Image (cartoon, rainbow, N blue to C red; front, side, top):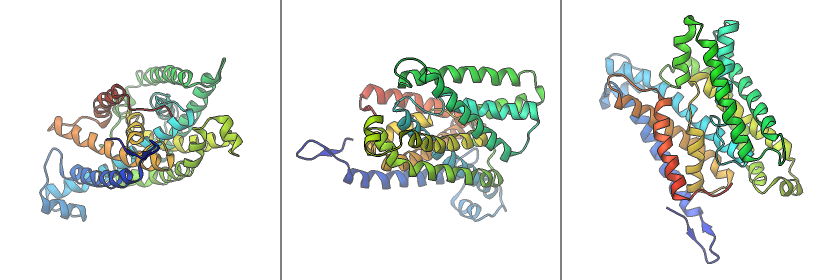
Length: 342
């Protein structure tokens, strides 16, 4: 559904935003309740209410108690990935940019695997900082490679550099893990991407990093709006282009690095969600960023619920489901030709 237009032909998005945003919030709340209630065992209303209050007297209540942190982790990770994808598309002015395509997820994963295999690191808090370091170094590396040659860091060169880096780092990770039977099983499961091992302790570790990253990202909304006008015009309007790019990128790196450390590299969320939100809410990053965070949470929760339902009594990891959900949706967006240049 497109926004209506005024007499000058410009889209009027205000009323549409006021309708779409509450609908998106309501849908996310419904998905959260569904995630808590639905799984290998379907929970009745009485057990659902008791379990959400912390009761574990029955199997149903214990299941609810275990699903609540899982749902919260899915929401946090989805928000982080959706928000970081929107920032990366804005910083690079590349509609194909996201943490997966630019290789940042695999860079974070490689750093964590090196820490586990070579330095015997085993604490979740260290994983988070290793992943952020790996994500940051990968982002710098991809940007440096994409800047070589005429024209500087064009969207196409960044996408190609990111894709090549992603494949290379994935191969390096596999090469490190294969000889190590003691860690291979756990690392391979983590590499698929999932939220099944969520605990309150892990959420408490990652939450401060995600909040700081989100705050930096939200404060970059105005800067991203100026960068969308082009570097020369942004500089002419008084914006420090390099500083603006660096701050926005820092927020995105913290978000995707922390999410990858806890959940593994999950693809497609950061690619699809910003496109959807751009269609619904326009290109203004003051709307696009918070809506991408909300839609990212909804998509990851939905993918987690679908993974539990279609593979009963087992389940599919959320990283597998996001690929099946995200790929056809992204193809539909492209075929509809409703995505505009950033």
